[in-house]
Image 1 (cartoon, rainbow, N blue to C red):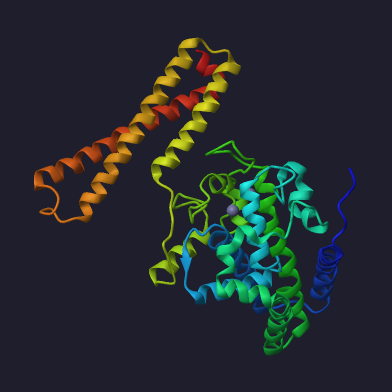
Image 2: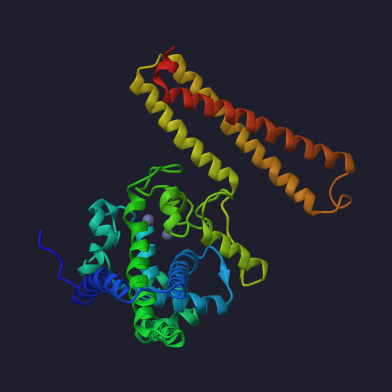
Length: 381
Ligand SMILES: [Zn+2]
Ligand SMILES: [Zn+2]
């Protein structure tokens, strides 16, 4: 098959910048050294670019998982230009196509099915037909005056953010070149590759916790360097959720930032997927895996029957629990006189709690069963 034509702007940019970063940055460091302040600016600008992409380009503009105050959108637009990952229009349009046609090698602009290199950066270096400039899927974004302003002034913003700002900070601090090398160059190259890892590695390395309909994986290690975007299987399964790591202890600083901003009114309408849907998706995957395991181990039929019975019961409990949870939360919101007599109110609370407990016990049994299946010697015994 004939190769797509090379995109020379990108090819030069993505060859020269890493080559310079790999040589000039250590060379200058060796000859003159960098001080703590310069490293601090580097780290802060990494975070600024990274989170503008994850919270802004990705979760806000591409997926509309929450709404943000114009001030916040303005900051994200600047940070996005600083990250040099194209403007919001192109980024979101490509990304929506990625979700819509995920793993379709002809239509997903960075389909992981075409290999690590292609999904990481190869797709940017040539003009592939899958990365078209068709903006028909981002009409809503085109109506956002801040996104439109960034689109019109993209090149100017890129130069100001990548050269002007680091140079100014360096001038104020007393070493323009050191600042340009660390906060400018090294930061640019690293922050780009961090984002690209989500398109490449997050579709190859990790667990399919919620769905095996796409190649997307959950990977807590990757979340550490991608500002929380490593929970990519969850994200592809429930893309309208503003969170990627859903447990409080999941490292997802993007989620924490969006949440904290909502407390002061700078973000609002944070969307979350219902716990019932999440639990069901997870259970479904576990059941599928366990059934396959039973088959591959050649376990007796009664194992499969038992497994199915436990699965059905757990599913039933999740549904019941979810219904009662909703009823209880609704009742809690209203005054007692308005809804139910006090006794009924208490009863509702108790049944909800009881179901909550039952669900916990059933889940434990289920997990024990899955664990046993993972240890063939025990399972056979
Ligand atoms: Zn996405
Ligand atoms: Zn993806």
